[in-house]
Length: 115
Image (tube, rainbow, N blue to C red; front, top):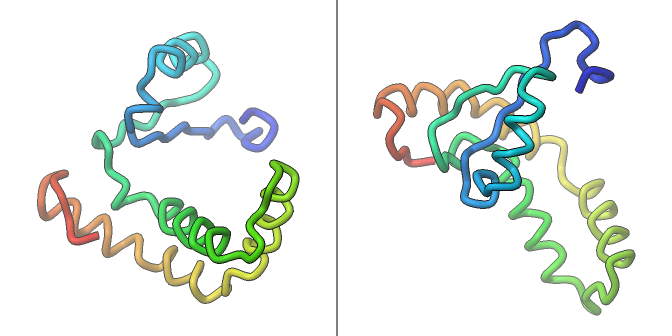
């Protein structure tokens, strides 16, 4: 993080999903808490995480491959290919949806939204 964000403004965000809140992850965050700021986010809030939509699109593309990838290297190759095939407009639409997502989350005071 310090390399990518050399301005000292780095922030770590995670959605508190069960794997992210495991003992190992929690311990690591505690041990490295002085290395960055931890942005507190409502627990398990994937509706705010556009990465979930990208992951789903890539998963769908991989599942529809014939033949399917058979090795980790095959999977990596397919994922890189499918990432490049995602339409830029799709990614831009996800980014542009963020103000609406934030507004919806504020309206329900951090509860569930239609996203």
